[in-house]
Every structure is written in structure tokens, then in C-alpha cells.
Length: 521
Image (cartoon, rainbow, N blue to C red; front, side, top):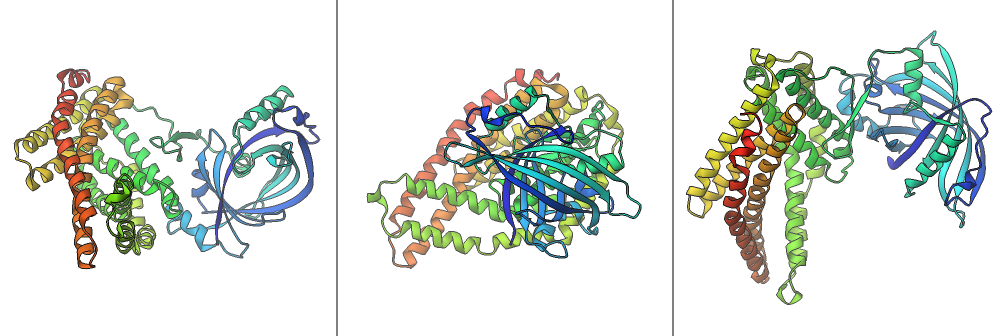
């Protein structure tokens, strides 16, 4: 059984025999408790071509100390020294639970012992006035050696300050200030493994980190080229979203909040880029990949759509006075949700383990390794990216006009849903153009997002009404009152009409000529 803890730490370079400053002078620290010395022996595993190390993921089997076992460290924020550490009991081979969490990186490649680290660790606990641990300070003397025959053996000393569970991150800043004042400098290395690999076999290029669309999930890039042409910018967009898929894969497997949604967004952004930039990318190559991305988004949607719908209906029920809750309303919703969700979690994980999914990841890698660029890719982004964004805008305008021309009813609902898809594509085109065009593209994307939100809320009301009708029928057949379900149906119907009345004003603001002219059209 794998267990997870959030690791928030900072590393410092020290020399053998370094004396620590008096950390009891740090605000909030009442004492420093010496916990003694431990000998740790860790073997780090990776593919022969070091795919995990390239993504700043570490997988090790460690003996010694209080947490002997298998440890998988997944980066969350390199800048803040935050990683999720997943533990599994000691075994001779990599535990299946951890194998799944690195499947998107490893795929069909073999995991082998890569490096051995022997560490003598002197541990001290920083405690508060009640004796509760605030942070752990570890002074490590490390010796590293490659597992391959003839590997070079190196050594160094370092200091780690790790925040206690649920600790205040500001404590790390206070300790950092005290250490720096004493002449102890932050380390340039985010992990012992990376330091050992670089020291024994340096590689070219610098590692750059970004945050994926505000999700807090870190990804690694080894490319240093600054985008210049339209093709450069489009490929940068594709690369970022491919990296998002890879980084979010273990989060989805661990059922972390919002991870399925963010992974679906990454697939949609990739598909949208393929469609928006058909003048730049050869669609004979991108169309088949886009179809597979559509399949993946649909599979992920089974879990996500039910989650969103259940949250919406639960909020509706929670807002009603008790006097209007006739019958076992909450119980009926739970039964309905469980029935629709049965097996969906297992199905999602099965999809991520499938050969079809792994083949999709291979296809994305191959596409980025040998980009199917057309001649228009050489054009400056001020022309090609603007043209693509305006084309997507025109597509949205046509769909909005068509939807608003229809009378209220099912046909208009369908047309508004199609307009929503177009708004999302136009928004993504604006986002993709922002690195090249700056504020005008960002403003364009923001306007398109406002339209998408209104249309999205409308579609959510349509889906909710269908669910409420089904729930009312189930309640009636079970001899329960259907009054509350009908009441909620009316509320959703009113919400849908509100969004339809709101749309013309939002669209008028989003479609102002100056928003588009600012792009340089």
C-alpha cells in the first residue's frame, strides 16, 4: 500500500564539519532537539536513457532510517522545493503502485538500478514551546557511485531543512535568513540524484521550469531556443501541453483534486492548436493524433462530467429550505451518483495503462521530434498567429449569430453548445498567441473566455435539466415525491434563460472591433 506525503524542503551547500548557527534565535523556534545519526543506503532506479531524471522525478529503494522502503518523488514546484513523496514497503522489485505513477514517462522501457547513494545523516528537530516539531534539519555526508561497472565515486556534504507536516512555510524563510547570515548558501541542486548525475556525467543545456496554467504542476524543458517564427511559437504551445499531459498523469492516477479536469484541458488545447494552425502544421500528421486526443478527453470526461454535475445538483439542494425537500432527496442523488460512477475510477486508470494511450504519448513525442511544419511556419507570428486567431473568431461569430437567430428550445440549446466549442477554440488561439503578441492577445483571450463562460454555464444547465428529469422519473417510480426535482428543474430552466439573455451583451463587448484591431489586424 503506497502512502503519500508533501515534502517541502530547502537545500544548502556546506563543507564537512560545518557548525550550524543557533536556530533557537529563529522566531517561533523554542528548541533544537538532537535526534542522532543514521546511515542510509539508497539505490536510484531509472530507464537506461534516464527518462525519470530528465523530468526531475526520483525513484529509489532505501534502507536505514525510519522510512526505509521505496520512495517516489514527484515535483510540484521546483522553485519552492516542493515535492510529493510516495512511499511503498521494501521489496526486491519496483512496486506496482509506483510503476503506474511513472508509466507515462517510462512506457515500455525497463527500469534498472542507476545510482547508489550512501548517506550519513545527522538529524535535528526544530520544535516549538510545546515540543511539537516545526522542521527537520539534516546534515548529510553523501557518497555517490554509478551502478554500472567502473563508475566514478564522488562525495559532498549538504544541509536539508524540511518543513514538518502542515507546517508554516514562512518558517523556512526565517531559517533561510538565519543560515544565509551565517554564510550558508542555498544549493543549486534540487536533489541529490541530479547532483550526482551531473557531477559524474555532465550534460549540455540548462533545465527550465514552468507552472502549467496555474495548476502548480511543474514540468521540465531541456530546450533553450527562444521562439521566433510562427512555427516556433506553435511548437512551444504543443510542447507545453504535451508536458502537461505527462505531469498530470500521476496526479490523475492518485485522484488529486482537479487533475482530471486539467488533463482534459491539456488534450483540448492540443487539439485546438492542431485545428487553428492547419496552415502551419500538416494536418495529415496532426489529424490522426487529434482523433486520439479526442478519444482520451472523452474517456476522462466520464469521471469529470459526473463530478461536476453532482456538485451542481448538491449545491442546488443545499440552497433549498428544508420545507421544500420532499422525500429522500439527498439519498436519491447519492444512489444515482454511485450508479453512474460505478467503475469509472477504475476505468480511468485502465485507460492510462492502455497501449492506446501510451501509443498516443509516443505519437506526440514523435510529432515534436520531427515537426510536420508547412511553409507558413516560417512567417512572423504577428501575421500567422493573428490570422489564425481571427479565423477562429469569425467561426465563433457565425455560430453565435446562428444560435441567437433560433427560437428558444432544443435547437437553440444545441447551437449554443456548438458556439461554446468555438469560443473555447478562439480563446485558446489567443492564449497561444500571447507569448508572441503580448497584451492584445491576452485581452482577446480574456474576451473569448467571457463568452465561453456564459455558454458553458448555459450548457451545464441543459445537462442538469436532463439529469433532474431522470431523477424525477426514478423518484416517481419508487413511490417518492418528485416535487423537489421538478422545483430544481425549474431553477435550472430559469438559469439557462438568464444566460441566454446575458449572452448578447457579453458578445457585444467581446466582439468590439478594437479588441481584434489591437492584435494588428
